[in-house]
Image 1 (tube, rainbow, N blue to C red):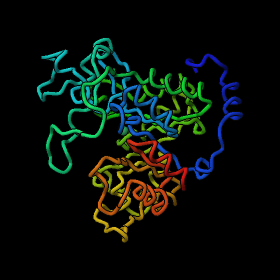
Image 2 (image 1 turned 90 degrees about the vertical axis):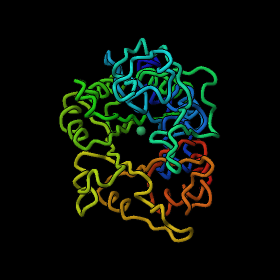
Image 3 (image 1 turned 90 degrees about the horizontal axis):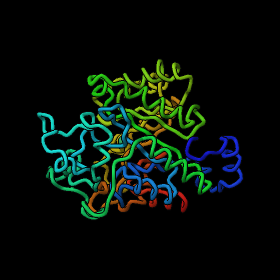
Length: 347
Ligand code: CA
């Protein structure tokens, strides 16, 4: 607990004395702030994380990539151009594919960049395919001044806010593309585990979930990296494309996964069919199968931006109701943590 300069045991007692025992917390369902309060402030900036903390999120997400000098930074993409001014500040530093890869820059260079609301959506607009679009109702791109934070800086922000507010908001780091990092000669997972251990996240009872899309990496983390570090934390297997790991969806698949993981983070269309008609939801058996194997289920990503609700939900609250209570998920990643917290409090 470098940030709070206070023995951990005292900190825990303080939390026990001050933590409000709300009914919604007792339900066990959690709100995960996806890239922070990214519906309101540029994703993964410390401002967006502070706002998510103030909004009452239970966990705040960090996507992690490495710099050339082996620092962990909080960035969703492997490249910097969607969310920073890297192309103007460091012209000529792109690879042949046009990408300004974070791993080609030292932290001192990345600290010179201005972060911004993304000028385009990853993969372009899902409806029109337009690569230049963004969320028009969100924080305007280019305004004010934001930067890219390191993983350590973000943990210190959250632990500092926990100390100052008497709350215990958790962290939810994601190791981005571990195979890419290995191909670049880096062991990003060991670096992440080292940082977690340094900041006191060492047991399954600590408020951290570590997530990745790579099952192979998850098995290495569970089987080798955590034992070598002498710690044990909860691991979450992200599931986007069911074709990536078809065995997970076969009978016994979830039980096999549960040997390595404590939870799954599926894309929400894998839980409720996006073609469902209002009033007749087609709920897959995924949550049931995961729960039967002892896995928690934390789907992503719930967004309240105009025009982005699936057709089966009349409102954002109804979308949350359908997932948290009809399908029975344990938590949800959302860009709008205030709305999910309000929903669970009202329920
Ligand atoms: Ca993520």
